[in-house]
Image 1 (cartoon, rainbow over the protein chains, first blue to last red):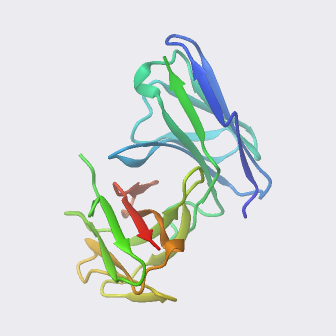
Image 2 (image 1 turned 120 degrees about the horizontal axis):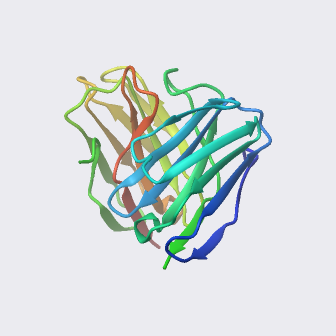
Length: 116
Length: 111
């Protein structure tokens, strides 16, 4: 299994509070991704990183920010959590970006976030 | 609007039966991947197909990429309880930086 951990694994928070989710990898992969998974929508990309301090938006980036100060860590922050951000969040890593055909993404175990 | 639609959304079958899951789009993809996800875990890649009409086999699983590269199918022969899980297709579009995931098919194989 690829060395990817996510913390916390479960979190319940109140609307309006800031929340930070952490993804840590030990594989030294260049690319890191944050997805959210909701019933009926599959996985949707929030933000991704193609190197230290290099990040870009995905298809559902509103209300989220990210930071990557080290190769191994990718943080996802909800500045002011809303109930619509209740979801399961997955971090993924890959050696190559998606532009390379067949590049595989390795996923972490997920974080279940509930915003009340 | 979901770029990749999967059908059926739910499938419950008896052990030993065959099944096919479909992944359809109106868009063309340069490659398509299939992942399986088990409860409480992240998705795990099963296969990548890159050529229109390509067929790949992984033991009892057969994956096909449509000739026009807009659709794909996953066929499982003699399903086993260990095949139970959520199956996700994911496509890469030329010029895009992310994978587009399908809506998923939740398969339950009853012993």
